[in-house]
Image 1 (cartoon, rainbow, N blue to C red):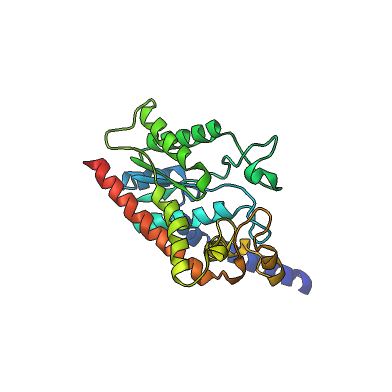
Image 2: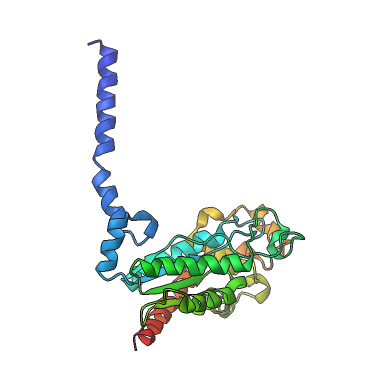
Length: 278
């Protein structure tokens, strides 16, 4: 064998060996995940039979969030927080994120649809999607389906979708069904704003959309989605489509808010499920 060919063969063998060794570890990590999308159907079935009775449906939205936060903010954020909530609950699985939500009229464009990249669907389609997802999960053996909404604009739709599941056919098993969890959004929005005010930040800084609060939560949960260069952050001060000042936002501030969302949501889910079992 020529020297060059021998080297190539050794490299190929080493690459093949490197590719084979980690596979069992990757498979084990996937099978222990709380993300439904990471599991095979037998793995999911086994988890349900072993007591994973709660399915969390994280609901985001694809919308503009000023010049400094990417369009997928809500989707990335709610996926991370839902996973943390599921791990704390210990008996929960996280369904795929619902990324298509009502964001205003398309023609003429209203609300967030006035900015490029926002995607909006009709309210009836959104509510039917949530109800269908919940019924699917209940049919596969889950007893409780919890809607976690990261966006404030569709909170009433979550309540209506949960009610539609209760009225639908086949009816959920006694003590089972779908639940809208207002505590999740309240913790991320009202509670977090109040905590920031207590630390000396002004309401004008905190803002209501794409301000300090929104930017800090995203830095803590999906930092790659935030443009942190000073010029872009300066453009985000009360930018068109935004409200607030993101310049003093930090991941540390956001982590405190994210921890609070998880704590409040876990407590609210446990309380609601205790009530459902009575």
